[in-house]
Image (cartoon, rainbow, N blue to C red):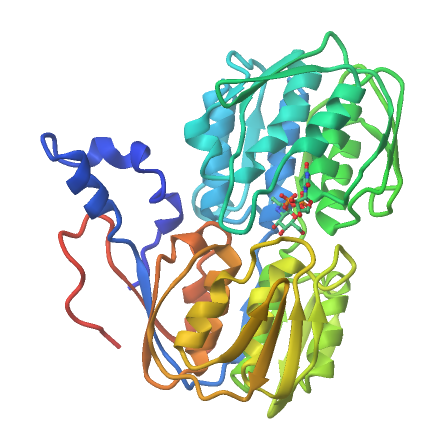
Length: 469
Ligand code: UD1
């Protein structure tokens, strides 16, 4: 059975759950036991039929939670997804002295955050290392507290992911930033408005500097900004808090700084990546799926590409999209910043391409190391060749069940999608990556006909012996 509160656990941060292991056990045995993680057993072959509901966008919720740092008043956010990254952000804010309430029961998708006192404006490495988006607190902390100590995020599975553009922008606004012992130490009396031109389009970079600019003295002009809907979500919350922002959702954002912001209530938009993943799930299984509570206007590039690949997509309304498919054909994708095809959908699309007739070229332009799912798809029988940032997928391939390993959040979705059409029972291991960003993913898929079982328990003494249906 699915574990109801699995998203709360923090399995890749051994330090946080070590205390619950028995006293006296060695670090080695703690690590060995910690590595026994939840996995999915998936029996492929069922077309997905029915209606599946999309949760709130993780990548909007994270910056919106960070925005609460900017005011002494309460911020209430609705449509918060119950995923592990949100719990990590809650811990991060709480460790700084904020009061963060994540509701239960009927109100469980709502959080209220009060940063009245920020006694400790430090983002500790123990928390930051598990979630790169922690760098989103840098700008708001300097803007609100005049001082910040934030651990450098370090590398991650999909590339180096530097934050040099965040630092460069903040320095231009008058912050003095030094790097010591793996931490950024930042200081500013009051940030000054500035003319910022991003060398490269960065989503969290745009969000971080936007949050810094709203409390800066004077005007900030930001150029070459990310246009992602998540930036628009953040700007809408900030505006509700009293910020003066023009142009969010375009490449040029203009901010007139104010001296203080007040409390607000805001509803997070639906998760476009989760919605896109379900559209692919419907298409790859030759199903008939209605994806509800989505924002169809955010799905343009994905809908266009699935249509080109032979899926039949009907936009039933502004928040509902139906997908049907019987027979897919090859179509190339090239990842781009919004409104282009999202890098966060590349791995899932790759799974679909293995089932399409012909040769599909998949080009990854945003991150340098985002093909970790390929070797696992190949183990299931996919025919994929990688050459630098391009992959050639020949289909349709007969996928057969295998034990595969998730390497990152979207790779995990790709492997689940492949397993849904593979013959036999696949085991998808390390689904804690999936729990970072998909709310009750397996439960939602089971609801439309998938055969999935979550197995394993982080404290189980050994690998589960049997594979249940
Ligand atoms: C965000 C999303 C992530 C998505 C990505 C691209 C969140 C929490 N995460 O990540 O899901 O995959 O956008 O759509 O919203 N870069 C620099 N210097 C910087 C910042 C970025 O060189 O200071 C580079 C990165 O290495 C990368 C590119 O810019 O090659 C885009 O990265 P960015 O948009 O910043 O990704 P994130 O905001 O981390």
